[in-house]
Each structure stands twice: as C-alpha cells, then as structure tokens.
Image 1 (tube, rainbow, N blue to C red):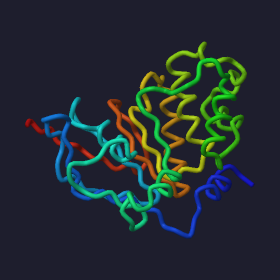
Image 2 (spheres, rainbow, N blue to C red):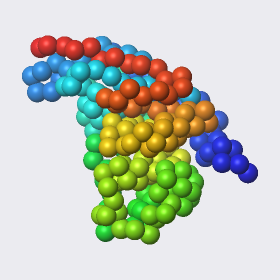
Image 3 (tube, rainbow, N blue to C red):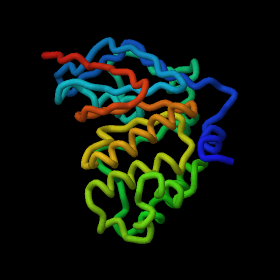
Image 4 (cartoon, rainbow, N blue to C red):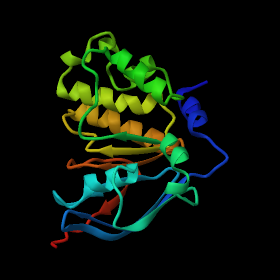
Amino acid sequence: MDQNASNKLAISSPEQPQLQIEELTIRRGERLLFENISFTVNQGDIFEVSGHNGSGKTTLLRLLCGLLLPEKGKLIWCGQPIHKVRPLYHSNLAYVGHTDAIKGGLTARENLIVAGALNGGGISPEEALDRVGLSKLRELPSRFFSAGQRRRLALARLLVNRARLWLLDEPFTALDKMAIKTISSLLETHAANGGMAIFTSHHAISIAHAKRLEIPSILA
C-alpha cells in the first residue's frame, strides 16, 4: 500500500466532516478582538488566517480548540454544536501552538511514541520523522535540537495520529526554506487525502488551493 493510500484510510469515515463557524465574537478583557466572523471548513480545505499583530489569530485557534469560549457565535462539527459532540470533535482535532511541547529528556522517536499512544492511528514514528527530515536524529534527546528541529518534531506529531482537522499556530516559525517547503507539502497532502487545516503565519507561504481568512483590525 502506498503512503497516500494509508493516509486516506486513516482519515476516512462515513461522515463528511465539516466545521462551521457562525458569527463568532470574542473579547480579550475589555477589548473587542473580532466580531461576526463566519466561515466553513470542508474536507480538503486549507485556511490561512492572517491579520495584524493582536488581531486575534491565536485567540481564534484557541477558541476552535475549546480552550476559550466566544462571547457570541456557534461552532458546529458534522452538523452538531460542538458542545454536544465534544469527545468526537476532539478525537478529530490536532493542535500545534506557539510552544512546541516537546519533552527534552525523550528522543525524537520517543516523543512521537508518546504522541501516538495518546491519540494514534496515523503513520509510524519512524516514518513521520523521515517525512519531516529528522530520521537521522531519531535517537537523539530532543533537548539537543535546534529551534527549527524542535518545530519539525512538534509538527511530526500530526502524522502519528489520525486527526482530520489540524489547527496550527505559526507552524513555519524557525524553519528554513527547505523545511517550510516540507511542511507545506505535508499540509497539501493532508488536504488532498480529505483532511482539513487552519493555520496562522507571518510568512509568505505558497500552498496549493489555500484559502485566506483576513481578520480585520478592530479598535475598541
């Protein structure tokens, strides 16, 4: 079985996953970050969230993860409000934030073994490390990794689980041009196999068929 076929099997389901965001409004303290944001993420969609610093890009991802609550609006997964299908939604969700959440005392391979044990179903740790260009460092404790290597290892966690929806906050931070190309390819392959992704970035990233969501600057 080829690699693409195995990925398709990992995320296939009788359900047609769809994330609907309806009229979201959120504040940070007394400050209004954004209001009435609506969009729909279907299978195969990649959304790049852009906006000025402080516009609420990270807050939007944290909200979609369930770490924050909106002041107003709805989140709907497969036709149901997320609060009614939270375990199902979270089992289909993978989040990589600003911090890499890498265990420095574990090797690269061991970090992915732990990630796979928590929410597995994807490719093997060895294959995931190869996909992100870290196969030669698989037995090295990750505390010796550079910032870029740590970022690639954090993103490799996406590959060892079968999450359909990837939420990535600045995934290209600390990556060189070759690594950016590698991670962009992972996003494109995930979408081509029926996955979905929403990411923020300050870089000019070229990803096939990516849609752009601009968060307007609001002064309040």
